[in-house]
Image (cartoon, one colour):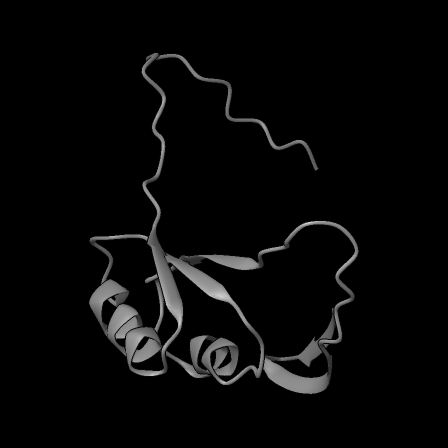
Amino acid sequence: MSLLLLEGQLLYQKLKLKKMFGEYFIIIDDFGYRDDHVSEGFLSLDADLTFAVIPGHQNSKVFAAKADQKGMRLLCTCPWNPLMKHVVKKSIS
């Protein structure tokens, strides 16, 4: 799968996937933060995708409703928070 985006605009899309063994699933994660051209762009892709929506964010219900209307599969993703008080918050990049 190849996608080329420039400033949120889809410039090139090639979604030809070859099934080799078993099944494959593509899940696009963490929707609910925004309702704009980026999320609309994902909804307009002509591919068999599953979207994971984080509940409780400003646009979670809006995005889930749009995806459901288009017949997309949805997952509810639950963020994990550390149980410890002192957690190292350094980036690995």
